Length: 344
Image (cartoon, rainbow, N blue to C red):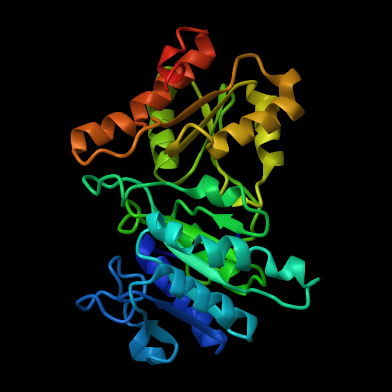
């Protein structure tokens, strides 16, 4: 007998809301705080993730805060050390820059510095990425800054099901987790299991199987890679598309197994190319799978520029499906690679 899993179609935002609601029901130490998490009209925050939570759990567990990212994260660090499991929401990940001291110098290091006697079960939720005209201060993808910091776990869900399962895992973790959503995905829909539980960190998902080129991509870039895969399949080119789901911990083994099969790799993220996590992955692949490679590894990333305000210019900076398709053709043919090299 084949077992089936009952599913529903939820938006990414609704899946996050469901994860928060279920964890808050199951554990009275879970609470959330941030700017306008109680109300934004009737939406519950600017993207609706905390909608209705204050009605069920009250203002003591769903707390509105002043506009002070450093203060909010600092409060979360202290609350987590005294027995709570706070989920802190920052409206845009660009403003993690204002909270780097409590996040990087405190949350990431406290458990290590105190030999495990103190825990920091803190989740910092925010969103990354361009979304049409939000310009240079509200469109950045800063995940590589966080990947560089020992002590932080970094989560990048691309689907509603993963958003729910990974957030549940993050809330239950005894270590600080930065949970990065993408503002273009909040209203995207997908199937979510009725009884969906936590999804373990460090387990990548093979979103599409193939045997010609491995493509590793996150967030919106994952969906563009899947679109490119569908287009190329009509020509007989089969991509294996991998969603890492978490950047720390990172499931390198799944990527290496795929490269052993395809012998080619393209890595795609929306963060700018220079200093991005794609470069770290390329380095590890060169160390562990060089003999399997039949072509240079390519990165498909945003250009090393501040994000323009104009939508037409934003589309030049951020990779498109066409850019991914071109990179795949390049690793298959060895044709001109100048689109991906020589940028300042």
